[in-house]
Length: 366
Image (tube, rainbow, N blue to C red):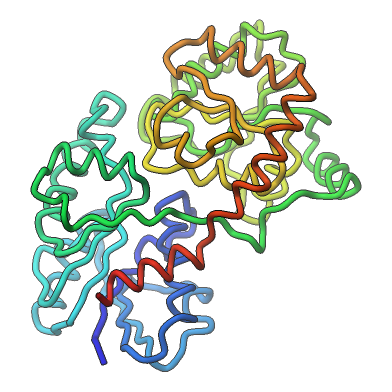
């Protein structure tokens, strides 16, 4: 019987994006998968009820209060683990400075190495330091795509033999197509147009929203563009200014943060999904769009081909003319949309959180 440590600070956040949902889903799946080993789940201050719900007797939860925004894992958790040993510690992002036992870590992407200009300078410094520590301390590294594996080996060549690629999943209980009546109801409640292009995620330079707006301006604007999500760390002011351009401001809807309750419905109501990111470690929204039977146009990069395959059309994220052409084709070509929808429905079945968790736990226990 092993003592396995897990950190739940990301899973415990109220407002979740990709890495937080990854941590949340793995913890929920681990509860179902292993009733033999002892799991010690550490978190900062208060724990949400959904993380406690359904936990079997071999899961133990420990609050480790910490007043600062960063370094909880590096310092506060380290101090605790210095006196409480584990056989294994699995981190979904950052690792403690000190721990006893084998360390397993997930590296989601190395964007701050490849595209440092897309990050706020302080965030870039912190992420580089934290990831170097994690990669050097880990006995095993999990990464979420073959593309990220190549990046890790490029910057840290000695890690090649300890990396395993495990793809992410999507929430099968929440994402799926809606009936016409359900779509009409949601669209009416939120005063949305009958047809619209959707982007959902952080509104920041890394996600390339500036080029998306510039490209959209060049289209026929047959459908409005809905930008849903919170302001990101870098570039939001510029995005706001572009969206207020008098020529297009009536065709762009800034929705702000969308609750997890409404997110799947918003996705299912979209006529097309646009994902113009400059860099990604994976791309969960592509899976969610495919599951909702929504056609996709996204950036032409290896990792998004790895996820979407033949369920998307691809554009050069640095070429607003190319983005414009692909968006226009989605708005005007019904046969293309139908083809992408059918391909996506098949493609989405290759991914699930249950599969991700099984493969992850297997690697942790090896």
